[in-house]
Image (cartoon, rainbow, N blue to C red; front, side):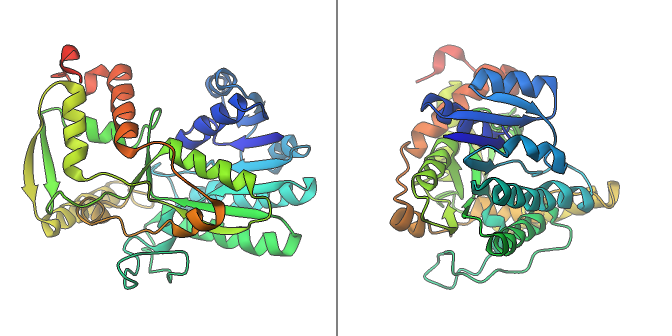
Length: 343
């Protein structure tokens, strides 16, 4: 199969390229720079220069059987217009390209489309039938991902494109440089906040298991629609810190923090950054306390039942792989690490 991938140097895109190439598919990846070209070629893809917001760049996908659109702005401190260009308008171009080439389209979406605190009334779970909650105007990422899906379904129906949107929660894994980098950097003094009880299952998923879902979507060309890919068994806050401490060789001390205090602190942090960088995305600090202190509310039953998605990597194993990779790549993140202390 000939596959066109965007976001090939990102977390999911890089793992997708490696998996597809390993399985014998011909992969072509869109790249913005010489460094990106080297990265995707090392992973097994042929690189083509371009940017997702430029219609001419999509011409490289015209002869492909499948388009995997994984490129997105996530936490870049940029304007709403830029988020619309990269996350929304590029999705429109992806659908039109798929229509012109007769390709199937897989969009990497996000559970952010539900809103940062989605309705959990149905037995404490959020499935694909759950109503969308409000999204703050300052939450450029969630707004753009919701708009991108709206564009996807509207254009796919109009143009007759076979499409699937996969909605993961926070993704971690080797080569991830957002969540884990900040987390490990915050543990320089071996003290970690435990928001709430610490026994809640976090809304996180290992990148390898997201790639498993993409493979299942590829294997079911007869299936269209949105699927949560947001629950692979998971781990708790305490397990997260225990694994990091185990891999680093020293126990991490924990400090209990009420959820309300974490939410308030995140809100203050967000306001401060909005004042410092007006008009630019500052992340969602006020939602971080809920993310850390609440259980994962998302159900992936539809992906299990229809796509046959079965996560192949135990999340504890995935977490250990991730922490080990980061400590090898960025040893300065935890200066107190003891190499011989690994388990």
